[in-house]
Image (cartoon, rainbow, N blue to C red; front, side, top):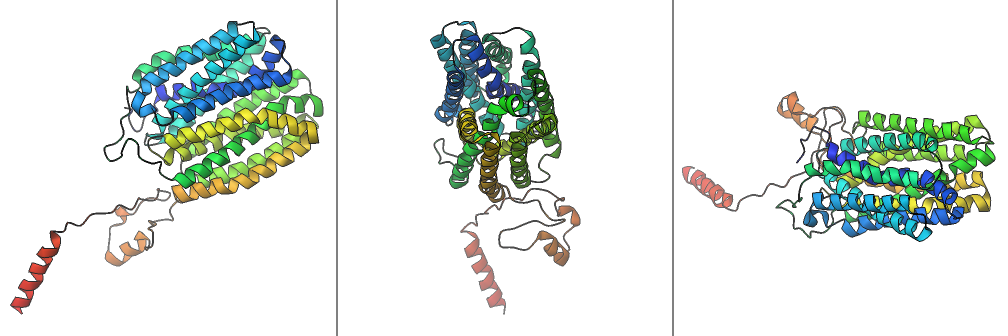
Length: 437
């Protein structure tokens, strides 16, 4: 399908088309209540319906990509996104906008499902997911910088989503018609790593909820608590999105050198600190520092979480299910942030969200350690219940070239079946030896 050491750009483009809707959620929701007779709460509900529809697509289609075919489903998703978002952008009635947003959301979720499934089957899913996050961050940044200069109205962000689906459509010709399962696996085989996958999915709901609780009220924090103007808040967001690009590039350069546990665990702890800082900001410096640092770290940790989910099942089912769970958290985030801020204030909201992230960092790190192993010590191969290969090599004279390099992933233990015919041969040998004696 794709060369193992090349970036699968059709998948990257499909990934970006599916992930763009959550990235544009603030401007999409913000323009709904300004361009239509909707309250802020009603506009937020429309945005939540869009993301819930996207999550539903993942749950429904997680195990059907192989059967239906990646190319067919990708084209269906992009067509739904084009028609749904395009219709919502042109509509002037609220019911039509809601229906279009829900249809477009299901299309985005379908595109994301196909991309996640195929990326999970690659030799290096982290590289592909990092490239996808880089693309969607750059595309969202361009939209945020362009849309304000094109005039008011609810249709511009929705039109950007529809146009992206249209542009990506021709690239689906390079996707496989189908992705049949390997002959060693039954098409309806049970999900591997069930416990780890469920823990990761549950943690991702909370992780995404915390991120988008802050994202949903960041503009209000800047305007109401930090006492900044709209232009200053917009400038901070633009720089923050640029910092997000730098974060994705850093994640791609770092790769798997530290494994997944360190970036996920330590990164989540640092994000918790950024949320507390941003939510308690009272001036330009603290607000900008919190938002920029948070936007730098968020895509880094997300890329490793996507890679971790992909590693749980080569067929991509856990990647899709975990991504859909993340969408549930994303959909509930703005409402949660608004409620917490209204009831307790922005600083208390940040403290609650930061404390929650510290708690869920523990199970996510545990899953990464359990399923991904740790980086190797110099010249050592970890074996379950055995000694490092470096010690065995020193005793037996094994050439040093057979020892993996520092940081190489743990080698899987493979059972080698012993033929039953070997036992009689040994007995014959022993009998011949005893007769000779």
